[in-house]
Image 1 (cartoon, rainbow, N blue to C red):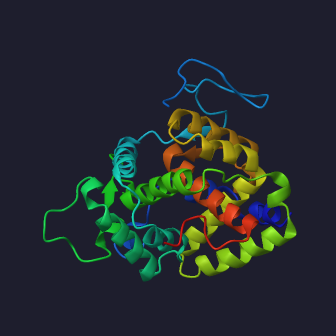
Image 2: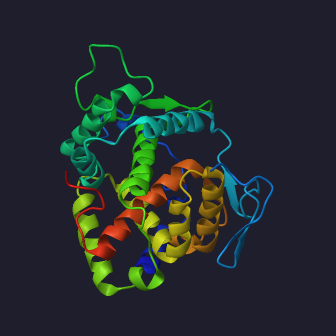
Length: 284
């Protein structure tokens, strides 16, 4: 398969670039960028998942300095629980637009402003000019790793938008292996990533490979929206089963919240390609 062949060339570099929610400091400002079933086993179509408290499989470690990541995700979740997701046509431009293109950034900024009463830490008037609210909003972890708040805002919004507007979204192995769907995916992604940085393109390709390798597990992860502990176990399973997408590294360090959103984005792109539509979101 073409994606598998490509994955072998990326090697260990992918495991670092694609799985950590960081941004290059020099690019941070200009880049347009039910609860867990505690103590119980979860059985899904004959596949037994570990307890939601279980550690990741051997070879996969969790980023230790995650206080900032969790804080940013909590704020993003607060926003999506409160926001009425209006107007959807602006959200559609923000989700389906070209990465890093000003019009895409402005659309996300407009969506935040339209729901500004729900956005934590909204600046006091006068508000900064667009598209400031959709920019990186870089925050450093204790160890000095820069993290973009926009990654979590956008990820949480997309995840909630799928649950709201496309609750039937799903993928199967037959669908992602269909030559017509693959051709549509490659064509659409080439256009969407036209303004993306090289590391963003590599990360997108790795996530698309992971989803294609494990379409059923990714579908279950997305449909577990609202149960982050369960979603994390699906993230671990997808990584463990599809390491070839990362070049088969011996060790992978991951920030599960960020990776969940990256996988959700790739899932969305695949569903759009499989269905042969422009978007899963309403046009008006």
